[in-house]
Length: 425
Image 1 (cartoon, rainbow, N blue to C red):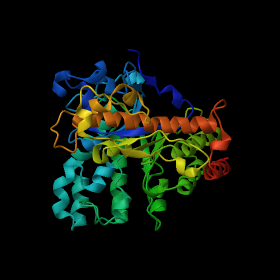
Image 2: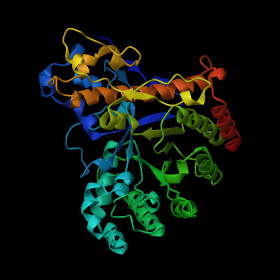
Image 3: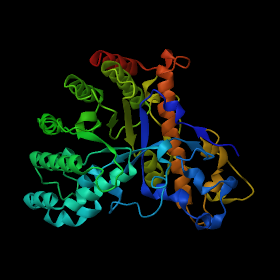
Image 4: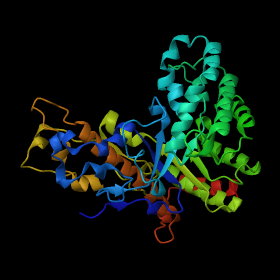
């Protein structure tokens, strides 16, 4: 069987979409074949075909991903996965430092701190004294990442009372002070323990009430290789442009190698961030400056909702510039070994190869859900592919000299592209 579709090359010149990789999926392609459905895999596939880093995957290949250190309780990936075993010369991992896990109380090292959440001064001092937490995160990022976010304490804790985090009652200034402490530690210690030195992106945060300016003033003079946009700095095209312009005017992009926008999905964002990338390359004279963005949507769709994404049509109707999804069909009739069905209207390397019947684990006729872990991994692989396709297809439609079709670009998208050009010229 021939190798699968190469999506890496299609990102040339474009902002890069990064699926936010979950560790369960990352380890799955390296499992023994016999551990999955007794080794009876469909269509002569290999588990390794789910490894999108592998150019020999029979499904598809893309060399970019985001992976979070916040999923791990140590500085090492103990179970081999597609990141720990990757070909570093031909793959790119953007490491997330775990700020989201800090905000949601899911960072393994701080889960037990919730008992003292009502005493923010105790939590503040404990973080300062617990050097091992910062050290584990830094070692993980150094070892497994090419670029990585610095360890920020998210300000959105101030606006969301539903989050059960030990840090929920800290003030904005305390969160900023802890973030600066983390920055100092990263600046002073990166690469020392592992010998593998990642490049770092200084994270920006803003939740209004002057917090963005206070954060920026506190972190702007640290010398890292790029920037990451979190919190309110990336909520809409206007805040993104405002902060990009500030960085540009303050000469903070003169040596910048990478900019990452957290929690954004294609196709619309792919076009806007590519336009920003082109404008910044022109303004700085740096043709290697790269913009990327990420989301966990492909994993949430398959793992939580069991929905399957569809490649968007992309017409002049703005409503089509979203990735639609429908429930994956599950029914006892699809457990038949003789009446084999395929999804006809949802296209990907997975749906072309793997039948609806193959998605169904063998269950009794009384069941209403027929997915097992293998089914979820297949669905996740499909959803990641669709999100990549939506990103590069949209960019081709707007920027590719031979594929550009202005009649299919919604007016709101055209207006925002003009706004980007004017703001960053």
